[in-house]
Image 1: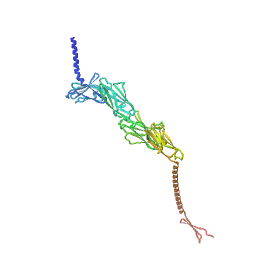
Image 2: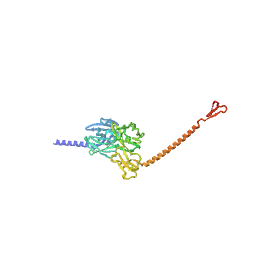
Image 3: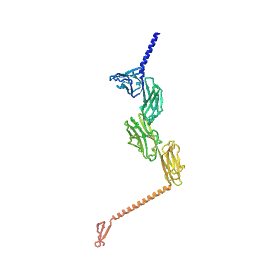
Image 4: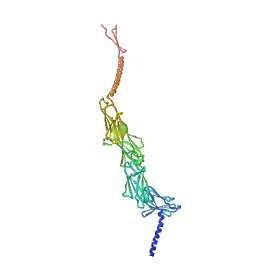
Length: 494
């Protein structure tokens, strides 16, 4: 029994000694967070002021320990730890800097300069962004978060903040949690370009870490369908504002502009363009259509197409498309043209009727309609189109000024007017025109007569005059023609 008591006493003594020896070491252990791809600086805090002593940094993961670097009397010795070639030791502070971290760098780092030994548990997170953070508009972002440490990985709470520091709702896949989390965000917009933040939180061990990452979304500043309204004969300008310079997009890409006429499935390629890695924009006209022009000389990434003297058949959808590595995105401008005609054309005869037709080139959205109204007219003289109808007619039996408006959400987008004139008014104008024309004709004829008479008079002056003398004694005669003498001899009378 005495021997058993002695053995138990020895065991308790050994345990007490181990506890006393390990307590200083454990008291110095701390946790530090590292991000894959970046650097981390590990501090050896418990050192004295002696600079000539030997310091050794070691790495341990799952019972396997290896030396990273050792410093002694201004001499540095490299070990065989996996991160040795990426590690630097500050000879003064004894701090260890590990660059280009990877998940495998997680583990226990110990700094043995003097007693006590400093122990640091490095917990490493790796954040991976799909497409290397470069997207086209309407593409989905997929974010993968992985973690590694020398201890068991905790379950994490993850929140995503956009460029405006607002929380974004994402779909989180946790099939491989806690080692791996996948977050999905659908349909990015051009305005999402900028620096985002991934916030990682855990109670035990205590983790409260922000990981920033950049997102670049190539596209158009106006992504929604834009409707351009105009009237026949006017000039229309269709514009697309590309954001590649604004977000400093470094990769080259191509694009083209297609036109799909209203009511026609045929697609015409009007032009194509390319952007180099130096952000230079080059445009090339591809179509033989001469009714549109390309604006040149703009350096802000704007794509402009000018259509002078718009006609009804110029309407349709104009699609600007961007392409990079087989991925595409596009922005659409719909050109809607208004035209006003009268049936029958010309003046309104007394007691007669006329139909005014106002039409646009394509179907209208549910919040838009056409409206005929007579200037200074009554409510009864207004005529509104039915929903989704692209034309409206109004019967007219009196002269006056009529306006056709295209109204969208109670806002007048475009207007065209038509003046209905009475027949007698129109006839009086015609009579005045005829009288003026006849007067001009009479004056012209008189002038022609005067000129003709003067020419005739000149011709008469230039005709030769003949004078004939008959000799009295010798029976000879003498004829003078235009100042010339022609002597002729005649036979005397018997």
